[in-house]
Image (cartoon, rainbow, N blue to C red; front, side):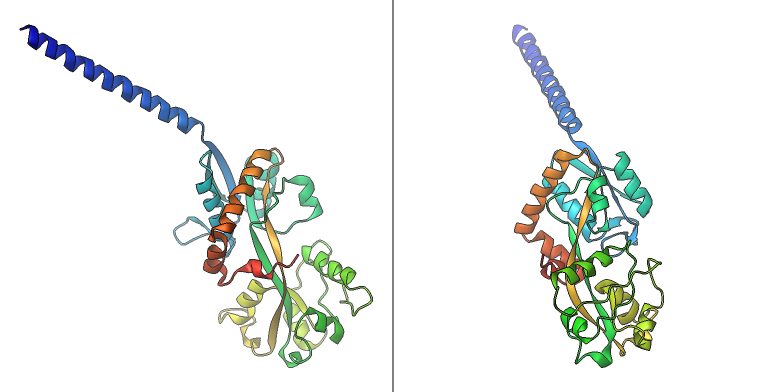
Length: 284
C-alpha cells in the first residue's frame, strides 16, 4: 500500500512539475511576444513594380519585398503592410500612424525636413531621354543631346526631375547645356507628340514609363514605338520615409539593408521586379 501511495505521489509531483514548466514556458513566450514591436509600414497600392496590391490583394512590389526581407532580419519587429494613397501615406508617417512608408520617393530638401532618412536607399528609378528615332545617330546619351540642341520638354519646378537637369547643367558649366524651361503643370500629356512634331527634341522620362506607354502593346503611344527611342541617363535612388522619432528603427533598417546588399538579396529582387539591377545605373 505504501508503494502505491508513494507512486501516486510521484505521479502527482511530475504532473505538477509539467504544469509549472509549461506555465513558465507559456509566460516566457508571451513575454517574448510582447517584446516584439509592431511596425506599421505604408506603401502605394498601384505603383508597379515598387509597391502595389497583387491579384490576391496582398502587398507586393520591389520596395515592399525589400522591407519584408528587412523584417526577417529584425526579430524585434513585426512589419504590418498597409496600401494607402500618396497623401495618406505622407501625412500618416508625419503623424506617426505609420512608422515607415515607401512610394518610389526621391530625396528632396522638403522630405529631409519632414522625415527621418536612412543612410541607404531602398531602390532606384532609371531616368533617361525619349527622343525621335530619326536622331539616333546624333543622340546617344544626355551629353550628345545637349550638344545636339538641348531642347527638352519643359519640367515643373515642383518635380524632382527639374533638379536632375539643374544639377546636370551646374556640373557641365562651360559645356553644352540642356535648356531647362519651367512648366506651369506637373505633367504635360502631349510630351511624346511634341517630340515627334519637332517642337522639342527630348523628353526626360522614367524608363518604366517609356516601356509602359510606348513599348508595351497596350500602351497609349505604342503606335509610335518605331518613331521613338530611349536612352538611359542615370539611376535616381528612392528612399523609405520614416517618422522623425524612429531613430532606432532607421539604424536597424540600415544594418539590415547592408546585409541584404552583401548576400545578394537586393540584386535578386531587382532582377525579379525590374528584369535588371537598377542600382547599376546609380552613379552618384
